Amino acid sequence: MEGNLSQLLADLAQEPDRLKKTLKILALITEQIQPLKPIVVGGTALEFYTLGGYTTKDVDLVVADRKRLDQVLCNLGFERTTGRHWYSDLLDLAIEAPDEVLAGSEDKITTVVIGGKPVYLIGVEDLIIDRLAAAKYWQGCQEDFNLAVRLLVLHKGSIDLKYLKEAAEKELVTDILKKALQKSRKYLKKL
Figure 1 (tube, rainbow, N blue to C red):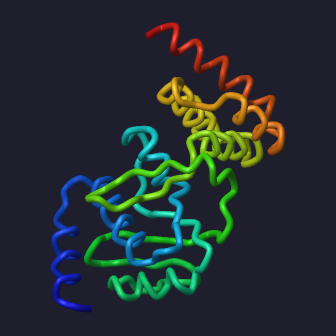
Figure 2: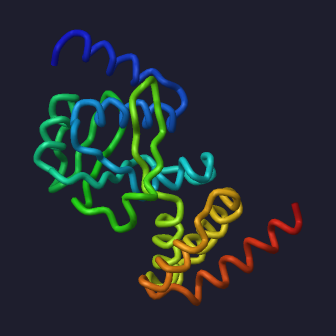
């Protein structure tokens, strides 16, 4: 690893805010892997969209070329732990690439600029659908339902309801989306 990159990683390791550190690392990964666009999904996307109301210690990325991601992570000092899982002791960060295809719309991706570099996140609507599917199909996990409601409340002004309802229909979660929308409206009335 070249000197400037080593110093940059050492500086990133000192960032006290865990989410900010993770986003800065993701911006670096995105810069290194261009022209590919790694998309943050899962817990880190939830942490971002819930404004830190949900926390995680790992990052799930969807990227079209896992081998290229492997090269980038290796160059940044990450070590493969098992299969598609990587870990950096220096950064205290685990990264996994669970898929090469985004389960959701590329048009809904959110781009956040960190230090002049982009970080791409799954769209909030697709994250809501993901949580509702988890709530419905993974033994009725109430936490996932509550996270979907929280996302609906926090992002009420920017959610594309037409798209959300179409995606819910496609994923067979229209019933639970209706319940989540009702619950989110109750919360919003109290505000």
